[in-house]
Length: 603
Image 1: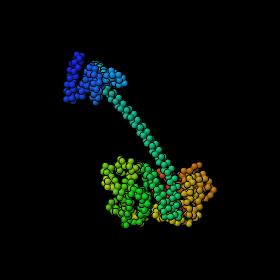
Image 2: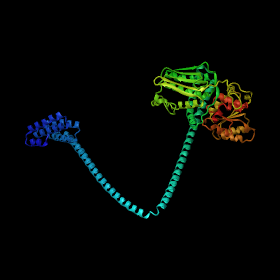
Image 3: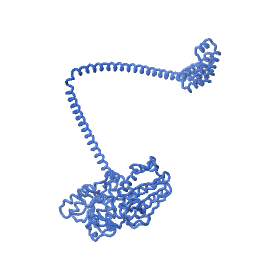
Image 4: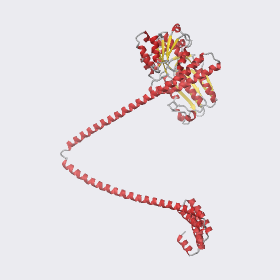
């Protein structure tokens, strides 16, 4: 639409012809579907009616044009339409609307001006950048020309002046290159050596910090656990109703679970260091499974899952192995089976098999009807910190250490572990261990049968027990109470000391057959007290000392033994093992019970 023709018609006062001209333009714009032409037509209609003095019609057409321009986002058109509306409302004395439209018109005008200025700035910047690059190219070309002239001049001079000394310079240059290469290699080697030394120091420091944290965690958690588990063992010996006894057993089993979580962390640390050991003894397989059933039955009931145990009749009543590690593996598998199941049953079965390991073996199987494992996660399942799926950590929780530890434990026991699973249908974990019937003697260093030592430790005292005087050095009042109750009824004369200094004074003043010495105590710790006792130079210096410690890191036992202790027992203390260890020393069989558990820690 030509503004020149329209302006001429308006100037001549031919408003009707102007309106007809605009309407034809609107028809053409609608046919073409060009919204910007339509908004411009409404603007022109408003201008014509404004010129005619038909202000209401002018406002109507300007408003319609404004709506079209807003839809098309035409900033220039919006500026003009708001401007004409400001004039029209001012002419009708509606100054509020006139002010609003004038403000909008000014806003769009400033935005357009800013955009134009920015565009102009970009153009100028591009032009300046182009000129700068042209200058750089010119300078570069000039430098290249100068360099070419210099090279040509130098080449001519060298060819004329250095022909006679070419061989000599070649030798000098060669020697220089060799010397520089050697110096550079030496410097790089020194830098690399320094970096390696620094990395080694940082690694040693990190390992030291890690060991200290693990040792502190072990000690601080095992000490209160000793009180809980010790008193639970004492309560089980008291006369109680079956319901109360089962409640105490649940407390003891739960404490064992907490201890197992701590042991997972310590075990992974030992696995990484290659210092995880297996302790072999005779144990009742069915009793172990019964304990596991009692431990996990309540959890299974909470999930609405049936927990079923089945032992093949052809298995011996007692087998030889590491019951603690077998319990640990089974607990991990049962825990996972219950955790990832919401219905059905978790079946734990044990049978004898001669084909899996190509030798007689006992096969443990834990089968569930839970969520199953996808093919994508099967290959990574035994890796540390790996969950069944990414969402499993948020939905089900867990550290992701259990199965990795299980794989290492089964491998250390000479077995194999694997699983079969289908997503949405459940998982069948199994592990096989070499079967050693308890009828085969597994002797300690002195030829004593370990099973016999265990049995003797849990039954009657020898005749010396009624005359034995035991000194117990323990700073924790709860642990002193636990020790008193654990040893109650054994016929020992018990004397207690609250720190190493008191223990030393009592040893000097009295005679004792055995000392149970806590390691960490105020005033004087256990190792210092033992060194002072060994330095007495009398018969009292030979009294056997058993360390009681919550430390469980590799190297603790070796440090204690080399410091003068005869043996040690870890917190939480198992009453049967404690009594067995005491009886072994009192009977003069220092090697029998020592080799059963503590000696295995030396690796």
